[in-house]
Amino acid sequence: MPTAPTRPDALRAVLKQMGVDGFILPRGDEHLGEYVAPCAERLAWLTGFTGSAGLAAVLPDIAAVFSDGRYITQMDQQVDGQAWERLHIRDVPPATWLARHGATCRIGYDPRLISESALRPFSDAGLELVALPANPVDRIWADRPAAPCTPCVPQPEEWAGQSSQDKRAAIAEGLRDAGDAALVLSDPASIAWLLNIRGRDVPYTPLSLSFAIVHETGRVTLLIDPAKVADTTRQWLGDDITIAPPAALEKNLRALSGARVQVDPASNAVWFIQTLEDAGATVIRRGDPCQLPKAIKNRPEQEGSRRAHLLDGIAICRFLHWLDENATDTTELAAAEQLDRFRAASPDYREESFPAISGSGPNGAIIHYRVTPGTDRRLQPNEVYLIDSGGQYPFGTTDITRTVWTGPDAPGADVRDAFTRVLRGHIALARAHFPRGVTGHALDALARHALWEGGLDYDHGTGHGIGSYLSVHEGPATISPVFRPVKLHAGMILSNEPGYYRPGAFGIRLENLHLVQPSPTAEAGRDFLEFEVLTLAPFDRRLIDVASLQENEIAWLDAYHARVFERVAPHLGSQERTWLGVACAPLNAG
Image (cartoon, rainbow, N blue to C red; front, side, top):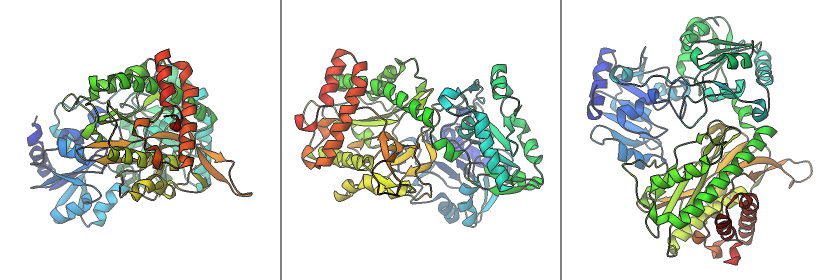
């Protein structure tokens, strides 16, 4: 097996055998997921880059790795600059780079790893693209792990809030209304929601990797390793769900010859479209119809999220008290492990919802920093520490970021100014009242305004959707400078996480999760929405410049802290409760 420095050349040799000059390798797996099983970590194996978003492009004499602003520093640290160019995907789009360096090359791609939407910029750039029958990385990855095979289990209706039968009936009705015979799903989160199932095939997200074909009758062909599905789960799924192995996927797709079949060109690999069209089916390109109802949480899901956030708030507050006493006697890795132990004290805790981002001092400026034994840093006195983490509970998913000062001295004015501007943006978004029908794009500037006034900004979105015991990053709604035509609906859960990052010095991010709710504040005849804050943990008052806050901002923060204390304090020990009382005291109380 080739060593890391020789892997690009080993790949080039295989590409030559396959009759192509170059190759596009996205980060995702066959399900285009954010978190993938070890057997699908091809980008990490080939390049060393472990971020959850990225792409590599290999040509005969040059290669590059691309990612977004969250991972630029991490990419510079992990990827060999002698073998790879390391580029910001927005500043130098991969298609532009390939057109510049490989305009006359035949560029191979694995049609099972890239969507039609993601492939389009490459074809629009005039590149000669070749769909390969197998992934060339797999030919040189000799010790590639086996595919996961964990049990597929039911998600009880008391937590799902709606039966699978009712969900399937609604999707099937939509198919019939559109005159379509079937729908193809390759997103395991959509399948998990539709069938009320969960699994442990990928880290951090309770998914059972599978594909599904939903028919206009409401029947579903679930293409999954049969070894994952115990008899009890088969019985629970019912007679309308047919189990077939993934190897039968192409056969089942070709059986739809002559039919109208819905495929989401963004969430399904282009291979599905190519296979269906080759079989004579009419492909109807339409968004995944499970995404929006999955994002709009029903009442049991909303209550489950509140329950999960109370458990999470207890763990976070215990951790922040512990950190207050041990900040300079711990390391980034040890602190993250300690937080996980506090969460694990609840019997309902399942696992982290993503790898904790535990960054002190300059490491906090790496937006999606992932501490390892090799990068682990001891927290120092008088510096900024950022901890972004989340938990999976069977009735809800959490995600929270807090930024704290290690002390013992007071923070400098520049750090307090930056923190307070981030906090003011967070409060502005939390206090927002907005008309029904507004998109997240329209709200994004609220979180940035205070930063912009100081000439500051951050290179990531402000908010993402959250699943219900599913993915911590869930579509289709976002709060971002990038426009997406997805309206915010009551029942959606979104993060509120403005930040500021000073490379080589510190990072600041403040994140709560919000549940969109109907607002009583509206003119007669108009419907407005607002946010209910789910997260329960104090903000570090040592970093707040109270004099810079407006009265309404102080009032919001005092009310939020009072609610944190009311909900969390009864579940803490006496010393933790005393600490929380000080942390949640009104700002003008000192």
